[in-house]
Image 1: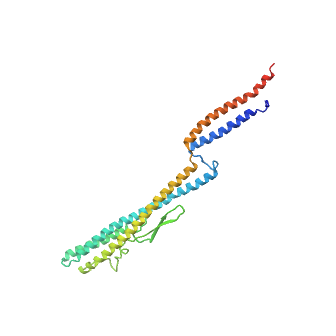
Image 2: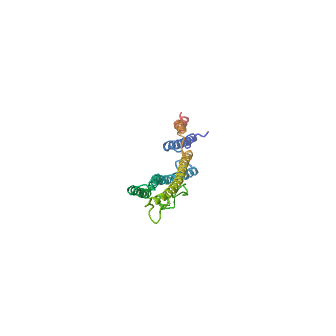
Image 3: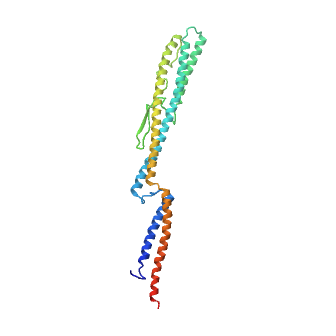
Length: 275
């Protein structure tokens, strides 16, 4: 073995091992501090890129969920209006039936007619107020509304169900009403048809609402799966890293000791020159 004061192979080797230990220790400490084994592109470029793309997809799904929730609310408002309208139609049918009684005196007939007309106006008010965020599926202002369905921008289309008097086939040259018992009798069938139309439209809205609920649940599960997948790619196993930290700290201390011993070797050469 070469003994030299210019070159100390043992010290060089000990220093290399200590530097390697320090590098591992820095990596482990970084993982513990950040909670990630891949915190940046320099840690693992391929994994980092993959995780970023999946995180972007997961983040985009927040906008999808917001859009679907707006869709739910828009349908819920239309359904609430529809429930009120069906109640009003039933009451209108009841008033028309009562007014068809030819034994009524004029005052009673006129009172029933006034009630009928008031209920009809309430239908229009209910439809006009069935809006959410300025949009409505009940007024007939739009034929359909499309909400976000996926992160790629594809849509979930909801067909409008017009609940106005026109949508219920109740508009004529004049507003639906009656002036005689005979007209009131004819109005009974119209109210029955309008009620059937309204319930059919509400049934369609209910089916669409269920579809939105199901898709929203799926989007939530998809987002959770993406987030879990990203975590599997980049998150550090803190229990494992903690144990490794203890090991590396011990190894670092031993490396410092080994370097100290190796640095003492050249001093032994002095003993060769003692007389």
